[in-house]
Structures are given as structure tokens and as C-alpha cells.
Image 1 (spheres, rainbow, N blue to C red):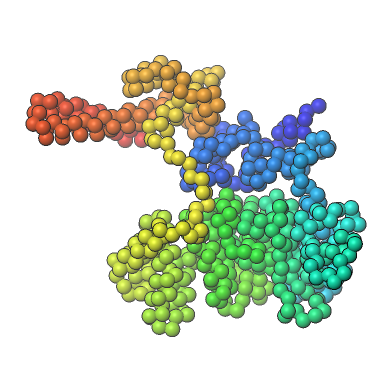
Image 2: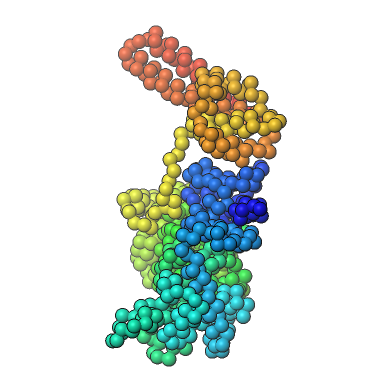
Length: 588
């Protein structure tokens, strides 16, 4: 009988698995995407359904579905096996799973706690009415597994202990707090811990796979003065939960983000759930922290387009400002929804769902939004100028795209009745500050920038991959004798010598890339000829540069005859370069 790993690979298509995390597109017999493991503009991440593997030619990440899930989720093989087994409908026994995996009991604790909270909410008419009053439907309450943590010191921990979970696992899940104020320490260690969440409406927070990893609790029905305690509290960071890497609702929104090519970001759980209820299923929310680089990395798996929706008051503007800085620095297209003063998205949706949807459709680019905002709020032109100088100009300076910079510089100049030259000068000054800054705001999503190969090596590698791919086919289309001769004429090296430079693993990757790029092309001989033209031109460009330096030297030293010989060589090289350019122009 096949092993669970083999069964999973038979039942799951690697394209389906990867496309649940990143946006993929067809590329011949294969698929490609922007790599989720490093920051890139041009897709270099390829998936081969036939081979059941993936490879990124930018950062060299590669492997099968298990490798991908391990890397993208940051988990070990045992947990990747569990995730994929559940997805494939494959049953695992204890012998299948690496017993060194320690997260399983903690996930079990979280699942049991969700059930306990939901059962308690079902009994709490006041809490249910409150949620109904806030606009939530019973369908939304069930979809988001909203619950209620009852009042009392040890209701949750006692329930979990009765189910057989250890106090250690409950503590690791972040559900209890150790008492440090007992006058008489109890001999029973269990009595030294009490529930973290008490008398609160509970919102489960899930990871990208939909597994509950944390909670947010809103105070409700507390018998003492509610002003003395926090309105919302969140789970502490645990082995399952890192608030800087988890977006509330991401597991439910990621497919909609991909299909809409747009992500809407709100601030709170109620805002998020109401947005989904109103049809904005591509919305996510941060929980207990500002927007981080890691959050943006999750969003950029599916889109570079981001709409921010936060309260239109100074505090909301400031909170959104941090996220804007990060997003702009990472080349995302950022727009902002204008919410009426005094309302948050949940309030607006409850008041008028169509007004919310209209606000989304009218969202403005961040620069236009800020100019309008400060234009309305500033008392005079001097205050407007100062606000623009302190907040708007730095954002324009962060934009890597110079065309966008020029566009918004003109917009600012018109708003302030200043010259574009003066605004550009301020932007340049701000750019210099950014270059010297070590602030995390300007940290890129990908901190491991791979070394960019030189152009010639990239061309040679592509040619070698195309050659090897065709060599391995039953009915190759490439005219080997012609390309082998031309390669030797250009480089003075035969193909065997070139291929000796590659290991078998590298050859496999080159074939994979060639297949990904060239499968389905009408004329692979044309593709090979184009690569060889580029190679020849690169070699000739380098040779011409060297000859030009020799020519200057000969002329400076008065070597007229030698200079004439070199000049003739330069003319010949220039002529050949022109021929190659003309050939490619006419064929293009």
C-alpha cells in the first residue's frame, strides 16, 4: 500500500495547493507566479504539474508540495503532513507523524476552547442581542465562530482540564495567567492559574490555514466598573501566534483578494466581519498591532493593490499612516477610503451598506487623500503647507517609481501654489534622509535580496537550458547542428565544454526553466537564435569597449598606424552589432 505521502501527492495537484497561497498564471505546460519567498516584480517562480514540484529562479527555493507548505507556513514536516493529509482526505496514524512535533496538543486546546466559548454564547441571550444590535447576522456569528468567555476565574481552564488537556498545553496556548498574589499558596498547582479571558465576547483568530491560534475578547456583562479594565484584550504571543505575522480573516479572504486583485484593510474584528457580511470578502484586519512588513508580505502573495479603511479622526489617521509608509516603501499601490467623521467601517455598513460600497469604489490614492484631508482640516495655508511638508512629501520620497513621484509632485505644487522645482527639491532632500535612515519603516518585505546574475551568464544559462530541454525530448524541434556551430563561432567553446560547467541538479533546474518559458512557442530555433544574438552582442559590446580604450591610448601615444588598425576593428564590430540590432528589430 502506498505511504501517506504518496497518497497525498496522488490526490493533490501542486498547482491547486500553491494557488491557495499565491496568484498563479499559465505558462505553456507549466505555471508561474511572483515568488512568495522573495520580493520580485517579474515572475521567476515556476510550477511543474507533470513533475509535481516548483522552483524559483530568483532565490533558488524549490521542492514538492510538502516543501512548499513547510516554507510558506514556517512549520516542520509533521505539521505540513497533517495540513495536506486533511486537505487530501488521507487518514494518518500515529506512526505517520513525527512525534517530535509539539504543536498538536496546543491546536487541540484551541479547538476545544472555541467549542466551549460558542456553547456559552448560545446560552447568553444578552450577548447574542448585543451582536445582533451591532448588525451581525447569525450566519456571520457561526461563520466566524464567535463565542463568549463566561465570568469567573477558572471556568475555561477547568473545562479544558476535564477534557484531559494538560495545564502545560493550556498555558502554552495563552489561555491562562499564573496568579502572583495568593496570600496562601495552594498545594494544587492548577489553582495557581486563572482564565485570561473572563466575561468577554470572543473572536477566534486563525492562521492562513484556518486553524485557530489566538483570540480577541471584548468585555461584556462585567459586574464591576468596566472603565477600569481594557475594552479589548488579545492573546499573548505564543508558539502558534505571532501578531506581526497574522492577519484576522486572511484565511477566508485570500481567494477573494486573488480574484479581485485587491485587498481591503480595516482595523478591528467588528469592522472586518461586517465588511465580509456586506460582500467585501477581500477584506482583512490587523489584531492588536500596527501593519507590519510581514503582514504586507502575506498580502503581496496575491496583490499589490491595497485599500486602507480606518477611522477618519487623528488617531485613526496616525494608525493608518504607519501602514501607508510600509506599503509605499514596498511598492504597493495604496488607496484610502474616506469614512465620515465619527464612524468606523462597521458603523457605516450598519447605517448604509451601499454607502460603504460606494466609499470603496471612490477610494483615493494616499497622496490625493491626504491633500484633501489636510485641505479640509488645516486652519490656514501655513498649517496646510506644514502638514504637507511633514507627512505628504516623505511619502512621495519613498516611492521607488520616479514617474509616480513626478505625478504627485505636480499635484502637491498645484495644491500649494508652488513651483514643481521647489517640491522636487524637497523630495530630493527627503530621499537623502531615507537613505541614511535605518528605520524599520523602510525595510523591504524581502530582506534576503539575491545576487543578480550578470546578463551574459543569464543568457548562457537560458541557452543551455533550451538546448538540454530539446535534447531530452522524443521529437526535438531544435536544429542542434546549427546552434552548436554558432555557439562555438561566438564563444570559441563547444557545447560539451559549456555543459561540463553544470551539475546534474543545475541542469534539471535549467531544463525546468526552459520548459516553463518555451513550451508552446511556435519556433524554438528562433528562440535559440535570439539568445545567441544577445550573447554575441554582449561579447561584442565588451570587446568594442576594450578596443575603444586601446584606441584612445594609441592616439594619446601618437601611434597612428596602430590606431588605424584598432579603428578598423572597431568599425567591423560596430557594423556587426548594427546587423544584430537590425535583425532583431525586423524579426520582432
